[in-house]
Amino acid sequence: MATRISTQKPTSSAAATQRTGDASVSKDSRFSNDFKQWLQTHGYGKYAFAQGNVPAFGGKRTPGEKVTKEPVIFIHGNSDSAAGWKGSIETFSKNGYKPSELYAMTWGPANPLQAANQHHSQEYLEEVRAFIQAVKEYTGAKKVDVIGHSMGVTLARKAIQGGDGFDPYAHSKFNLGKPLTDSVDTFVGIAGANHGLAAALWTGDMVPTTNRTSGLHPDSAILKDLNAVNHDEGEHVYSIWSNVDEVVGVGLAGFTSPIPGQDGAKVYNTFPYGHMGLKNLTGEEQLAMVRDHQVR
Image (cartoon, rainbow, N blue to C red; front, side, top):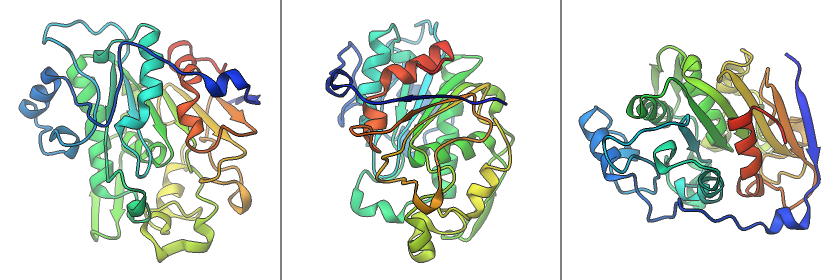
């Protein structure tokens, strides 16, 4: 499948854009009361995202509210939280999306000091997969859109692909189930280490995040599994990445963020489009990929 690449240097206006709207997510944000109640009564209450003590966003104001747009699901990266999607949610809201059509959950600790201990664990994979399934079921949508950032990209890709997995720290084999590919219209991976972290070549199995089984080492089993198939994340697949990503890096790991079989990519070459800037400053690009299936 041909890949359309768009490259862009930042402008001062893009870097300084402050987006506002009637939907916002902060560290104190939670799901709507309707969604919270629905999660508890439909078998999702056991997951951390449904337990009400972490940042989250989304849900209907009333049970009868109509969802007219394809729901968009945001999956954050390592040591981040749902609150990190504030800019994207405001951009989508400004363009006609309601809170019942935008969903963000929190997985793992939002603590940079614990970042090295996070990996593609059975717990996180099952949680991300359950959230995608819950949003689709709750909204009654035929398909959803998924946008991931950093480690959220590879977590979401595996959650969608399903199948077997192994958690080396829980010493457990597991099966996520059949692929959810037919449930996803557009998948957008932002600053994902799809082919490994450059720094992982030095740290390897010394820390969970870069281990060679469920981590982000370029030769890890989970990344080989993810990249063995093309375009399995949804009907439309895009990536957004940067040649100046100070976290993912390019170096000896090569260009790590492209997704096999992707339909297109937006590539940046200078700051402020580093690792976090790629998420925080590209709301319009994310919207174009999801809504219009285009690379701006």
